[in-house]
Image (tube, rainbow, N blue to C red; front, side):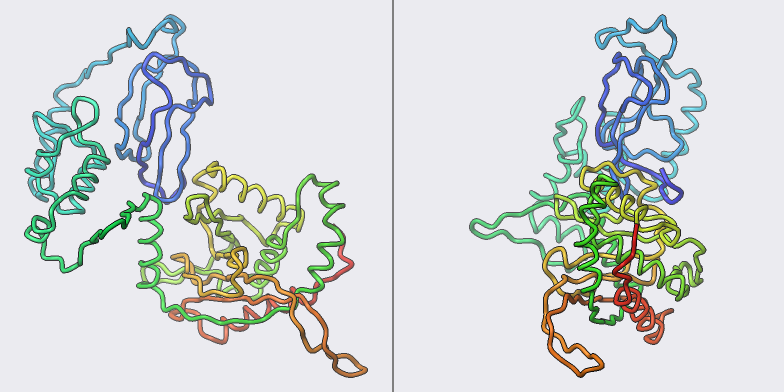
Length: 414
């Protein structure tokens, strides 16, 4: 699941007890705080036991399900499942005693003799200040009348204001619907992105620098080679890999922007791993990472960018695809914006926004004098962490990217 991932939420079972499963066939779907993905089986056999319910939080390393691989169990069906019983009741009893003791110490809501609550439901209850009595009063719609995530969210949305205020000292105003207003529950990823952005603003001292770049040479060069590139490689070449190549070069020159700040220490990264913010159909963003970007030629960079962008749009990214970024780039120009002030992707210290490329009149200097011409230009917006990156370094980095792009060899071959 990636080095920084400790747990995931089980979002859906794709197989039922008794189903035959082939090697590498998806058994269930999970969601981490960064990406959703399927979990394939490593063996061929029959699913005989599910150890977690949907919406349960599973830690990395835990067993999720049991698959029987013996050939004599291949006739198992959903109407006659194999039943697996606990063989060590003493250990289970000791574990339950320990859990009860911990729950008593921290005074959190918990399952009881009559009702089971999944870790996800308990976490929501704890976060929203739902008491044990309130939780027990919710009518569950799940299996055996269990309370699901939707049940507790529906309860929270219907709880009267007076009840909410009486249970909490919070002064946050409630959301009030009037007339035909529509209240929309934020998605899981939306809430995570919101928290990530807010935490970043509270952590880093954001400051911005802007610079205008003449990309006429690149515009004409791309137009000249795009058809031959498509014929040879079977893929489109866009401006994004060209810009990421320039950023990767600038990070080799200004290595103190290829750092992160963690626990009061600066970590200077050897590898240049550039995150590429990609928009999803639901309006959220995800940041797949181009590993060792400075070591890729333009063909390799193009293929990597296209692959990550496609898998981001089709929800096929793997956890490793979004890990270990050291710097981030975002294309605000794709939405028509000429510049922006992007928020740093923690624990990194810089992010570069690419503005829209526009035809503009410009003064062109020549040996015969100055004249006005039509040029293709864009703005680069650089947000950086002023705790560790001063204005000189932030501006020099931006100037290096500009010079790399404006000095593009329009006779370059691939």
